[in-house]
Image (cartoon, rainbow over all chains, first blue to last red; front, top):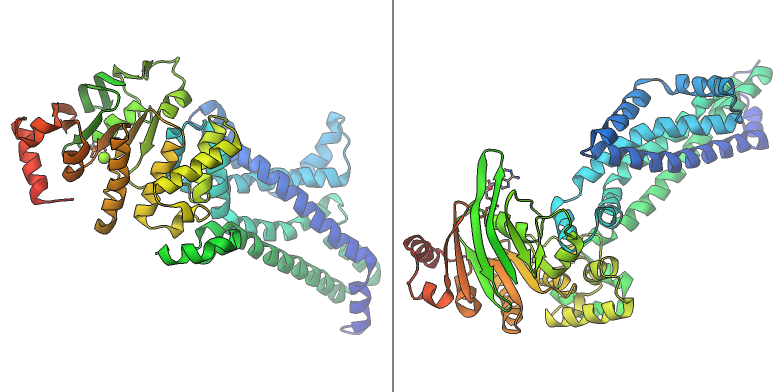
Length: 243
Length: 244
Ligand SMILES: Nc1ncnc2c1ncn2[C@@H]1O[C@H](COP(=O)(O)OP(=O)(O)O)[C@@H](O)[C@H]1O
Ligand SMILES: [Mg+2]
């Protein structure tokens, strides 16, 4: 057997079977990230609460899901739920596991963001009569979100690759499909190089997307040229007084 | 308009407010002064329930502040507050800063709020800055926007906590000018400040706070004519020697 087959490499690169595996990876990442973020937000808010009835369950959650391997969590969900007569697809089990696990990490990131929102602005919102709920949605969350985009980006990047752990419950994502092909075609290097290339492609695409999101979120914090984008007519008047 | 009745507050064993009483009538401009750490900020923040207090009572336009039944939103709509460090919402444009609370809290019609906000911006000289974000404005401009934001709620009284203390000297006057106009239009105001020039111009009364007590409460004319307590006079002389 030859050391490296370009023919094999390009065959796998063009293989719809592998390509669809990559799409499944993207899909799992997107769904678990969004759901994990929402759950993480809830847990972060609970953990910050003065009430122990809220903060303790949140602390327990984070402690548990960060303290055990994702692989174990996935197997427990996959093997445990049928025993409770809950029958879910492998995809559903994978997304549940990834979401629950990711939420624990995201909760800590979100908590850091919420802690960094200037308390003076919260007091100002309170002085204007906004309710605590309105302050959360209108002042705290938007400002916290901008602050945590870089670590959130890390999480998305990590999750793209972590999804491969779901192959342990036979989820057919990119990694699992590569392994399946390896088993009868033996071109380990060629297959895994293609997989690596796909992961690079996905993380690069995310890098690009993250930069766009960051650029958008930073708009209010740039001193220059900001009103031009909002209202070009304002520009001649505004530039001269800007400090 | 505002009645302070024996207001007391402690941080643990430390008593910040030791039974403060005062009466602020409609249209009055009361300037609160006193040494740093004497409890001025704490006192003014008790009025709109940003701080809690354990003893006494405060009445704002007949509304008891320290009561389980108090609707904090309604109370805070009556009393606008301006902070030392502006505290504009940094993720919102100046116009959105001003329109946020009238829309969310008072649920007024959007068109009316926008018109009102633009009128206020014109009044504080910021009409060309409506779509900018706070970071693009100077300190003085930010504080004027913060005053407009408080006025957008159509408050009955305005509370100021050292509104010019964080400003570069050349920006103090533009803010004081807005406040002076507001006072001349008949707004009820309670203002913690060391700006004795401002006090001399518009204050009806001066409260002198020291170590958690209102040690002096006298008409502005008497205060500046030197007919008030020794402590207040000493403070006044000190301020005259060390302006700002
Ligand atoms: N959260 C707090 N915990 C403990 N002490 C406080 C707190 N806030 C203020 N103080 C104390 O209360 C006193 C009065 O503070 P403050 O009202 O800010 O004074 P002023 O505005 O007159 O300078 C100060 O001695 C300050 O250290
Ligand atoms: Mg103070």
